[in-house]
Length: 410
Figure 1: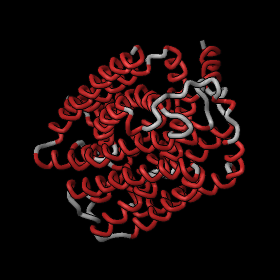
Figure 2: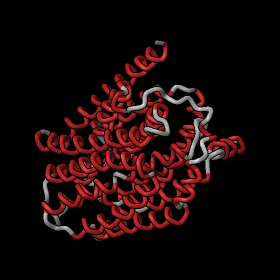
Figure 3: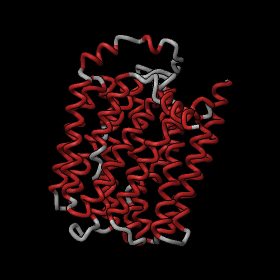
């Protein structure tokens, strides 16, 4: 049994390109410093900053708005000047802006700098997604994205756990660490994936000769993809609460300290690192991608609804994190597969940009609407709303899979 498990893990990680591994290592360094986002709401509502939850929600909404604009231009420039240059510029620029944001004490300046930071920093995502798609093929693309997510979540586990300790000591240090790791990741990208390597790869299309190229050349005219993006906005609006309003609920209502909150966020990353690659390797063979997305959405819905159950605060919060982590593992890798299957070399940046923009819209609407809802009612109402929206989204994906099947038959 142990031998079979080890063999399964080994097989899950084989057959990926050297560039996919390098991109994931760079992502690991970058995300190991991810400390600002999960603690931003706590920082703004701390005694030092003394802002309301709705004011913190507005800042997080500006972060989401900036990510929408950044994603658009990130995808546009990825198709025009190449994903390498876009990644390099955004890593350096984002790192500098994180450090600047940490020095801001005026609320209006925090709003402005947060928006600019997000616009620069989030332009990295579509460029990174395009590069992963480019350095993979139809046989290993899902696992290539999962490897990248593994790096993100391993970095998240490190960043969240250390970030909890730093936040308990001094919130301002979070911004310095986050900015420094961004710049360090840019240095690694420049050293290991120089433009000449990318140009060499771009001239070699042999790895994609066997792939089926979608007929739809414009993501803006792909109706199925547009409906998919609407569902992604609903999902991301709910999922982002894990990093915005939920930490405040844990601290103020469940009376958990920053260290324990950071520990739970780290658990989320550790579980993903431990099982996602193997699970994706096993599930993708069944070729039922939408089914796994639906199951993941139901799990995420249950995770929020589980917070309505009374009991020990540490047990309830831990159970919620475990449940939403399983849902995330089931859904997100196959959401990436959906858009990559509809894109090709000429429009990949466009598809990646719109996918990232859907997250940006969710990250804009979600924090603002939910923080406003909590201040008008209470957290329990928010949990009920989130659970039901996620269940509706699951139904939407079921309908979308039927529509997609009819298009294929037609």
